[in-house]
Amino acid sequence: MNHERTCKIKIVENGPYIVTGSVPLYEKNIVSKGKITELEDGRELHQAEKYALCRCGKSENAPFCDGAHIKVGFNGVEKASREKFEDRAVRIEGPNLDLLDDHRCAYARLCHKKDGKAWRLTKKSDNPEFREEAIIAASECPAGRIVAYDKTGKAIETEYEPSIEILQDPEQQAKASLSVKGNIPIESAEGFIYEIRNRVTLCRCGKSKIKPFCDASHIDADRLKAAGFDV
Image 1: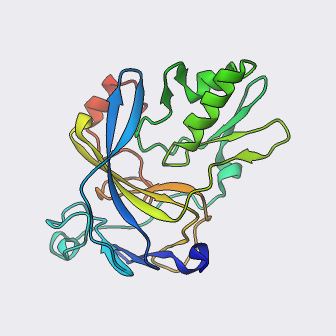
Image 2 (image 1 turned 90 degrees about the vertical axis):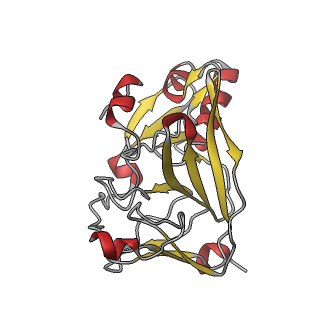
């Protein structure tokens, strides 16, 4: 079975994400360990061929939809750019590696490694260890904000199987984004198919200004400012 063709996420107007194709569903906790951040397994979640995930942030059965979007009058209008990643991203050049960055950040912090963040590591990619660390940092970014490219212009990506991870952020006291991996097509409420990508994060707090994608609005603005995040 070709999961990349049979899996799909359909956005309901002012409603949930409808996931079809038996996409595996996991919960992951964002955990800081010194200078690095990792994902740890969370609770087991119900698996099904088809399920609806909350988009408004008000479900009492999260991550699943319970119809709360109707009660609260959720406005789920999609405002994200429909440009392709490479067209909207900026290029950070390093000696032996480049990084493309579209600034679409979910603040999962998985780009933080022991020797620095992905951007700093790219600038020092003449060091083989830093280059490898930069590639790992980029490929673990759940939002797909950053992608590493070799000097021939080829993207360096980990091949993920289709899956959805419900990210929780205990450190920030927040329910984080939906991490979508493995080139799962995402269809807008009006039928537009967003660029199919290996990694993206979808909003599940209902507050993002770039719906359906996450922009870290699930985290308190003061916390983000204190962390040096541009809000």
